[in-house]
Image (tube, rainbow, N blue to C red; front, side):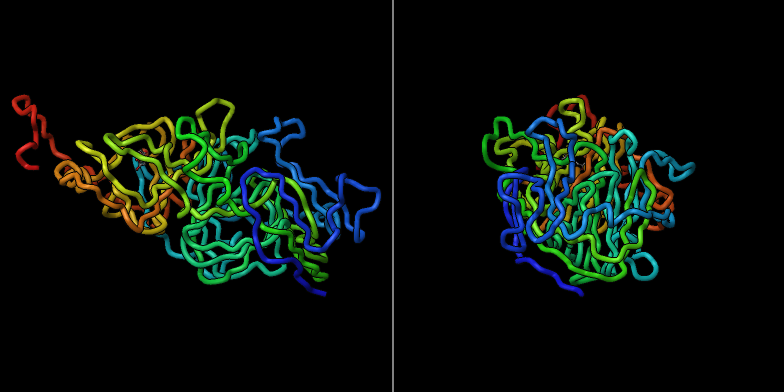
Length: 445
Ligand SMILES: O=C(O)Cc1cc(O)ccc1O
Ligand SMILES: [Fe+2]
C-alpha cells in the first residue's frame, strides 16, 4: 500500500520547539514516551546535539513513527565510492597554489539523483572530530524513488541554482527553487524528487556545530535573516510497504540497507532538530550608508560556530541585490588576504568584484591567505565612476567561509572548466604610484 498523508504547508521560526501531527491526536500530550503511543506508533528521539548541550544550542526531536529506525537499518552493506568526498581528503597533484575559478561544469553522464549527482569540490577539517566542511555541487536529473538517505557526517545546506526540487523528509515536505536554501540536519532521512529540471546547485556539508543565526550586536533586534522567514515543514508521512533502500553516509563511507518499507513514516513530531528552508531574497541587508566597504560578515545568513568565539567552523554569507550609496569610497570588495578560506558561487546576475568570468553555476576558491580582490575592470570602473546611488540589481552570490584550509578534490582539480587564466584578471593592474601626485586620478573623475 502506498499513501502520502499530511497537509501541505510550513511553520515559521528559527530554533523554535515546533509540534505538528498529520493525524489528529497522534502527538502524545504532556509526555514524550507514553506506555502506548496513539495509533500504535513508536516513539523515538533524534538527538542533533548532545543531551547536555546548553538550552540555546540544544536540538532534538521526538518522532512518532510507524516503525522505529532500528527496523530501517539493521543490515548495512558498503556501497560504491562516489564523487561525494569527505575530509580529511588530500589528493596529490592538482593545480598550482593560487586563487582558482571554474566555469559551470558539464552535467554528469547519465541520469543522477540528488545523492548520485553530488560532486565534491573541496573538503576542510576532519569529519572524525566533527570540525570542518565540504563544498559540493549537485546535478539532479531524476527523482529518488523508494531510495532514502541520511547523513551522519553533518548537516547539508543546499543552495538552489536551477530547477525545482521537493525534499521529502521525516519531518515533512519542503519545496525549493533558485533563490532559496534548504538545510537538512544530521541524521534526518529524506529523498529528493525532481519537480522541474534538471536541477543544479551548490551544497555546504557542515561537520561541526549546527548552523544558527549570527548575533546582530548593535544592529539590534531586526534585520539580516529574520527568524520568521525560516520555514519548517508540517508532518507528512509515507505509508509504503514495498522494497526500498536506505543509504547512510557515515565518516565518509556510503552504506546501504534493503528495507521493506519507507522510512519516512513519521506521523507526528515535536522538537527543534528540523529541516528548514529560507528564501534568500527575504534577507534584509545592512550596509555602508556614508563611506567605506564593510566586512562581508554583515551579510552572514547562517553561522556554524567553532569552539573559538568569532572563528566560525563555517559561515554562509550572501551578496544580494542592494543599493550602493557610499561617498568617496572604493565600493567593491577591497584587495585582501584572509585567514578564513572562501568558496564562492553565483546563483544569478553579476558579482561586483568580478564583472567578467564569474558566471552563474560557476565558482571560485580563495583559500587561506591567498590574495584576491577586484579584477582589473572592476578596479578601474570603481576608481573613476561617479558615485551616485546605484542599485546592484538582479544579483545573488554566496560564500562558504571556513576557518579551515579547503583542499581540492581530484574532481575539482581535473575539471575542464577550471579557468587556466583566472589570475590574469589581475595582471592588467598597473603601477600608478607617483610621489608627485598626492591627488592621483583627480583629473580623470
Ligand atoms: O572575496 C570576495 O569577493 C568576498 C568578499 C566580499 C567582500 O565584500 C569583502 C570581502 C570578501 O572576502
Ligand atoms: Fe574574499
